[in-house]
Length: 182
Length: 122
Image (tube, rainbow over all chains, first blue to last red; front, side, top):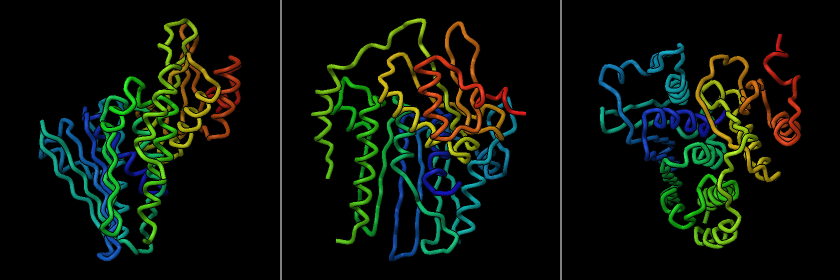
């Protein structure tokens, strides 16, 4: 993957497969602490302790039709290459939380990239799932929730192309504004 | 600076244009692979291009959905087109430029872009 937003898109697919109907995505650019933290947490079916301990090993999957499974291992590698790590919390029947940390100014830390594109791709494909984005930059915060959007546009569906286009521009602009120095 | 309040105005405008999905025989379903393999290969911009172009061309009988790993990862990004009564068409190694052509040639004009399909791969 060339940008962290693609990793986020990838990991969120796990949440969807786990049957989550609420997925929280967190990005924290803690410049002063020189730490970048990416969080994907969900209220899906969760994993057993046994599966959770295996899941960073390549080609671990719950699918039975083919031997795939590289999303978490690749993110783990990206984090470790940047002086960080991946932590997973999971409980069956409750959900899963994946937290990846990166040394912010590490030369191998890949850019966050187009997070708005990741959000709209997730929303477009999963209109019945609520997505939250909590983006922190140097202590400032941008919060986005599809639930709030849906109440404003009802009865128009959130995966309506015009809404998706607006959401893309809204999220892009909001993150950019957050990252401007005051 | 955009604000969520703008959505109310968009809602008013779009609301009057919503048509119930036609349950017609011409309904086409476009499926884009969005698993790790697809994402790594560049499926996100392919999906976005298709969604935007389908909307731009006003194609009411087309739904665009995402799927997991299809099983031929080296051919990702993959775009499948399903149409009742017709054989599934599998486009491989798609990029935004090819995606545009697929929407316009296949979805609009019903001309499969054979050179982009899996059968054209050696």
